[in-house]
Image (cartoon, rainbow, N blue to C red; front, side):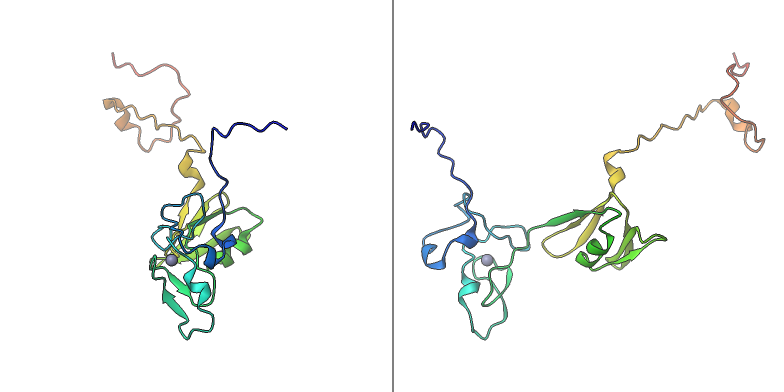
Length: 181
Ligand SMILES: [Zn+2]
């Protein structure tokens, strides 16, 4: 069997959870980008996430990781604050509402409503809900990607257009313009 020359020595990404703490003593995940790492609330990789899981039985409960300052639980794997986002469809409203701590809304329960900075916001089918590392949810509307082309309003700002206010006459049907020239 001929093996390809190892010109590209890129290694497959390893999951940090597959590495035992005793095998990770000399690892620094801030440098070892070939290994996954949980993110703290600011989106920074934890350089050594194996500490919390070793504190089984320690009377600490929630505490801040000494390596990345993320809030973690003693005795449990390091929490991951990676951002997450979900796109709302008409089928997953209940699931998305539970995920973001919101509730179904709308006449056909097609919306998801949740509170954001003291205001109630609504996600519609096709919108994407984004959760950052601090657990804040924001909505990216589907129409922000210019899904629907918005026709530019044709507003001829000639002096003659001001008088056609309340007449109710349909514009645009008559091809010939006014006799202005
Ligand atoms: Zn950490």
